Image (tube, rainbow, N blue to C red; front, side, top):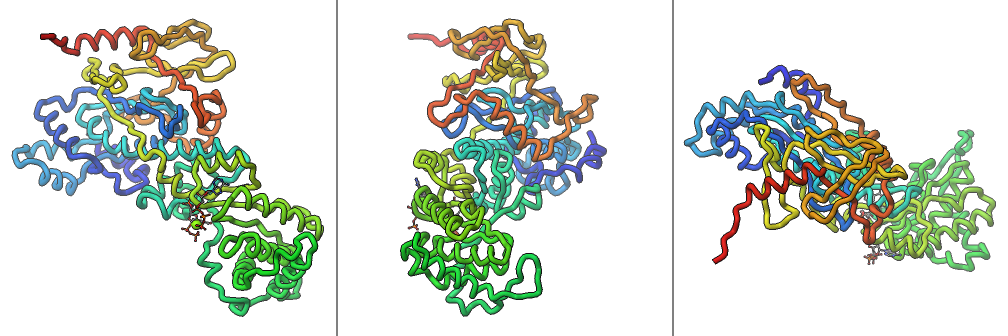
Length: 555
Ligand SMILES: Nc1ncnc2c1ncn2[C@@H]1O[C@H](COP(=O)(O)OP(=O)(O)OP(=O)(O)O)[C@@H](O)[C@H]1O
Ligand SMILES: O=P(O)(O)OC[C@H]1O[C@H](OP(=O)(O)OP(=O)(O)O)[C@H](O)[C@@H]1O
Ligand SMILES: O=C(O)c1cccnc1
Ligand SMILES: [Mg+2]
């Protein structure tokens, strides 16, 4: 097999994380590989399905992510000398040397990978990826594929759920790098939260790697590092129009603070502001006069942070600049955001500064889906949310549980039985169609054997629950969408789909969610989407089931 294949694609498309090599796997994949080889089964054509059994977060939908990394992994898949030496030393000494020589020739040139496009809304039991290839190789892809899809799909779904609750007009920023589960957790979270609908990340490396907009404010340390106004050594700032005159910016800010303190509307509320905080804000504004955004909760949001911020923002305004806004990182975020907005609005009127009322209010502090929901109920004036811990660690459900199951070998369907009906696999190499109803909304995903004709528009078709006999429905689809595309064709003549850009996948995710019926997406008691099999596949599954399951004997 293909040395040429490596040369062609090796440099082009390695996985993002260099740790993802052919050894990124469980030992049992290699022991099985050896046993397949010993039994001379290693080249038998096999089909594996990758799917999950239950939607995460108590929801009724999932966003499929991680496909691009799987394809990169497949394209780079090979064992170098040191990989093989390590395996040889890790496996029983009875293993024949010929096997390890053989491993050096193994790659994905005889593999084909079909998948639902990344960023699609997907449902339980529907295979997201179908891998076809020599048994030994298709088996060896399992662990890495599951690793690459599980967290990616989980966190993309989590991000999309946060987006659904926050609403499309809010800015969502991912702040999770410091709390993420290790370096890969951090980088992956940034990529997939963007895919799932976040607008930006604080993670600079993710910005460089993936072109995600990087955003941020400053921390409490910056405020605490100032002891007083005397800490500012360079106090001058030019007008934005660049006239020659230099202004004492700190004096301007102090002057504005006095004016705010004397304003009737604030009735002496701003008399006890913290001077070191004013120094920190003035200093930050001197560094970033066009991007001034201040964290206002180091001492007291309403008595110190906000008046100090407003004084600095007004001083900037006097010199022709426009401040961006504030960040709140503690307290009652709904209440504080409303109070801050009131203050901005009063200042706009009092000092005739158009636009001051709409300064951006960003909040952070342990936010999760439930907090967003609660804030919505209470009413708030928040424009942007910075979300870290709960978003990236997926604290409400830490794993998706995708599995990778053999469904066909040498063209013979295979099935894994289980006491638990949900764990019975759906045999056969399958095609999957999404059927749409009269309002153009997706109604059902249907799996069927490859030899069955595709469902047709305006033709009635029976959709059956894969296991429960009584659950079935006729559908006359207004649109039939074939879900799989070939993303890796190896050396076959099939033309593989090019991998879309992150922006394209993100747009796909957004448009797919917009096209779903809202009751499938809602947070509370969402309606399950129907996942079905064709009449033929249903009959086949149940025949095979009876064939394979031993009949019990009662004594
Ligand atoms: N209006 C609100 N409704 C519901 N939850 C809120 C609201 N405002 C803030 N929260 C959440 O409440 C929690 C408050 O956290 P916590 O009790 O640690 O207080 P804190 O504001 O961080 O105070 P401290 O500065 O003392 O640590 C956070 O998870 C925050 O996201
Ligand atoms: O709360 P999360 O959803 O995880 O969002 C990220 C948190 O990280 C920062 O806090 P940290 O205390 O680390 O630093 P800070 O001084 O900037 O607040 C930030 O202020 C947020 O509170
Ligand atoms: O830029 C911010 O405000 C930020 C970045 C990371 C974590 N918390 C906040
Ligand atoms: Mg914080």
